[in-house]
Image (cartoon, rainbow, N blue to C red; front, side, top):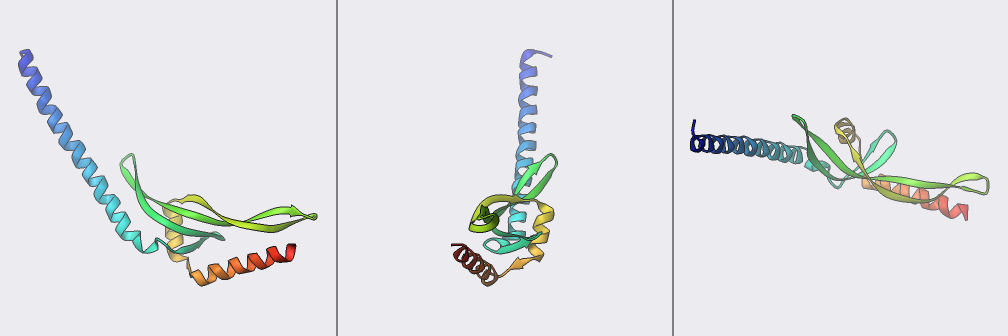
Length: 133
C-alpha cells in the first residue's frame, strides 16, 4: 500500500465515522424531541413528590452511555424554618433550583397539584409567619 492509498483509505474511514457520528447525534436529538413532546404537558405545573412541592420548569433529555434519560428542571418550594424563641418557626419560604430523575418524573405526572392548592398553602405559611411576629 502506498502512502497515497493509505491517505485515501483514512479519508474514506473518516467520512464513514462522520456519518456514524452524525447519525448518532441525529438519533439523540430525535429522542430528546420525543421526550420533550411526551412530557410537554407538565411544564408550568405544580406537583407533589414525597411531600415536597415542585414547580416544573422544563423537561429535557440527557445522553448517558447508550441511553437518553429524561431530566426535569424544577423549582423546589420549601419553607425556611429557624429557631425562634426556643421553637422552630416558619419565617419565610423560597423556590430552589432542583432536578428530578425519571422515576420522580413519573410520580410527578401522577401527582399534579392545582395552583389554587399551592396558593392556599402559601397563604397558610404567610399567616403562620404573621403570627410569629
